[in-house]
Length: 175
Image 1 (cartoon, rainbow, N blue to C red):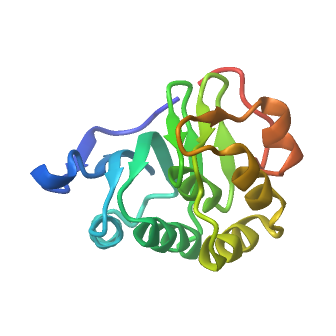
Image 2 (cartoon, one colour; image 1 turned 180 degrees about the horizontal axis):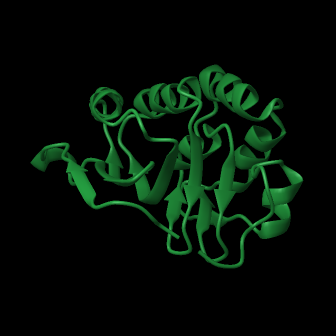
Image 3 (spheres, helix red, strand yellow; image 1 turned 90 degrees about the horizontal axis):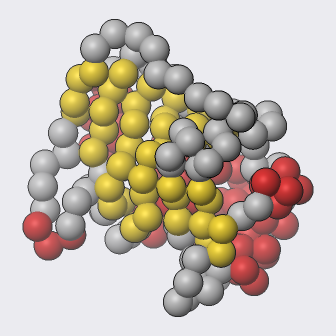
């Protein structure tokens, strides 16, 4: 449930070649992200945080496309470095490398109905190290490599989310 003062929009501009870059909507101590992660996203996130130091939680609303995997890792490390939590609302959808952003939260929460989808994760040392940095093990990374296919999405079950320690508390039934 989102509580608090009015919403302020920290725009990211538009880039017609890349579709809809991530937009940031600030509500109280939360910032909602939606759109496509591009090479510009980490710098835009840093600028938004500079203007909104009260932020404690990054809510991933709908991020199904990551145009720049290096930028996703950089953004994830920035989220973790600032000690922020991550959250998924009941209508949140994160697919592919966007899942890496969710793992960045110091505390990770999700509400029933949200969707974590694996899709063709690249096999490289940087992603393996990142997942180990975020979760303390590469077990989830190895699972993601097996389950995520290039031409489809594998949606994690609640049991799998629990098995790999993705959340810091059980799935919430409402929000």
